[in-house]
Image (cartoon, rainbow over all chains, first blue to last red; front, side, top):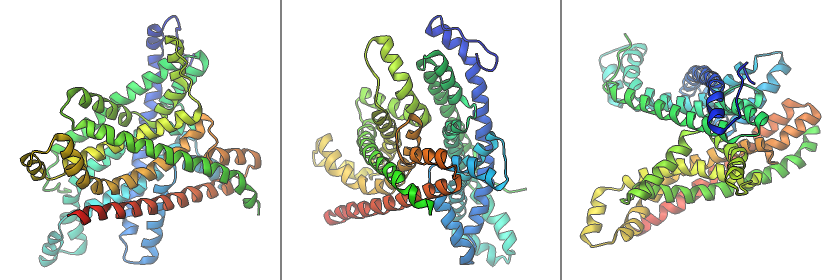
Amino acid sequence: MLFGIEWDTANNWVFAVSILPILLKGLVVTIQATVVGFFVAAVLGLILAALKASRLRIISWPARFVTEFLRDTPLLVQVFFLYYVLPEYGIVLPAFLTGALALGVQYSAYMSEVYRAGIESVPLGQTEAARALDLSPLRQFSVIIIPQAIPRIIPAMGNYLVSIMKDVPVLSVVSILEMLNVAKIIGDRTFNYLIPLSMVGGLYLVLTLVASAIVRLVDRRLPKQGIPLR
Amino acid sequence: MEWLSYSTPLLQGAWVTVQLTVYSTILGAIAAFAFGIGKVSRNWLIKGVSICFIEVFRGTSLLVQLFWLYFALPVLGQQIGIDLRLPPVVAGTLALGLNIGAYGAEVVRGAIQAVPPAQYEAAKALDFTPRQTLWRIALPQAIPEMMPSFGNLAVQNLKDTALVSLISLGDMAFRAEQIRNFTQDSVGVYTLLLFMYFGMALVLTAIMKLLERSIGRWRAGRA
């Protein structure tokens, strides 16, 4: 029994049907962690990208180092680090938030590169034209550069959203009851790992195929010439 | 400095991490070429198998694959009467290699399809067999294009090896966890561990860059 739902081990099919609602509860946690992690990554990534674009080396170099460091170290270790180290400095977060924060921190490094690449992909002539029209730097950025960068940024962010979803099972190490952890617990108690773990694999496959299809659809629908901010 | 006392067990773990990275990267490279070439094959059976492999391993989480191979496969073996229990090293290497291989296969496919069509037309005009076209025309031009992505995937693979600590394989992350339980010095142990992974990633990146340069040279030499 888990989350107050009983399972029936009479045979594989009955077992599979009886644990589906339990796995779906885990799936909800997986999606919640994905969304929170994605949001954190999007915001932190934007900050990192802005710092890296700074003309002052004393700002841009540390930001580059942080990006490289976050990208080259395992998510698992980052999760452990935040989970055990933050409380020592008096920051006590619930396990779920710690895990989602770790996901966000890891992916903020990737996101910052997405923003940078998106902005750099806008042809230089656009900036030059904006400058020739005597637009202020702020207006150059907000009405010329950003609207053209967005259609390039969104699909890449969508792909990272899918990646984040696939990394959520790592959070099970800090006892977050996401889908894989739930399946593992069911396996531990019934000694039948085959059914729950295979179902998690299947559910993941469906989830990522649907998510990737949506990302492709959005990519096709986005106006390539740009999206005005207002 | 208690940091020094951590170094012996951590270095033992680091050696396991290095071995796992090397073996699974080699397995991944083999899988990447096999299924990447398979996906552009004209034989529908080979193509179908390749697409299924790539979709399954890219579409599910690595940790799910690792747990499936380590926990679920023995149960499947029991039900059909074959002993399918894998030692943690084998399960870890297989999961890591096949997972990264699926990502690599997409890189291989992309690079082969990016070879200009005129090259294939020229090969056909010169009456090359499909096999000759692949080995002598497509791959020599496609492999240098794959190298930057392979570099990223190798670092990805190194990071992913940390997950094998969850099936009780004594890699660097596993040793660190043991030391932390023993000394309760979370800050010291995990900071050291993060920097060790970072250092290994830098070395791996440098190796892949060297490989990229030497492979880039053989295309220029023949042109």
